[in-house]
Image (cartoon, one colour):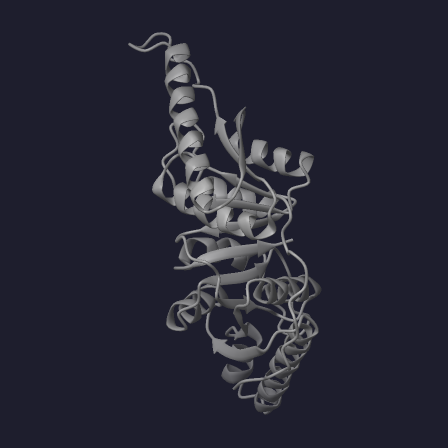
Length: 301
């Protein structure tokens, strides 16, 4: 099923102030490259940060903690220099910062203080600090960061975007952001809603209640309304939106749709709740999606 709306000219730059974290790993370098691609399009300076978490103290071992800290600092400085070179190769200007503290908290604090509207990190990493910069930190950032968070698996410019919605207000924000991003990057947008197996429908089925079919029709009508509203929002951004409806556990269904549809980016709200389906599509699902999705994920605030 597809819906079409006349395409208009894209609006202004979506993200004006981008912050990217690096620990020097391959995933971090991919995040830097993609962040630099976006920053080059805006013409604004990309901020690159590495976070050093001091060693917890190993003075009784062969290497004093001060020596470990010194080694980690040098490694992160080299990672920052490499990240700046990657950014420059993508046509972006970049500034670098080496911070100290708990990684996710430090990046969030820096994002808030610098009015960064997008934070970019790799999905995995091998930080030399004692608080992993990527992996678990990307999960934490998606939960607590005041900015949108882009979690990168591959360095690929978003040309085919998939946005998941449950019809809630936060989901509508995600749809608008995805549409603006598609317009900004001249990409294609597909809107997805997931018909997750309902506990209430299972009870109705086991009880043989005649209202089961009526309930199914009501849920189908709700999904159609959600998709229709999302297409309208995309149209307001000047984007032609395709629609999809999948069935299954939400995070897995979104991830499978992303893979089967050859999408470059999945966009999802940080939290949400469908008043009709009585379950969360966003929030806990966005947390799971970060782990199971095979493509880049943008978590929208």
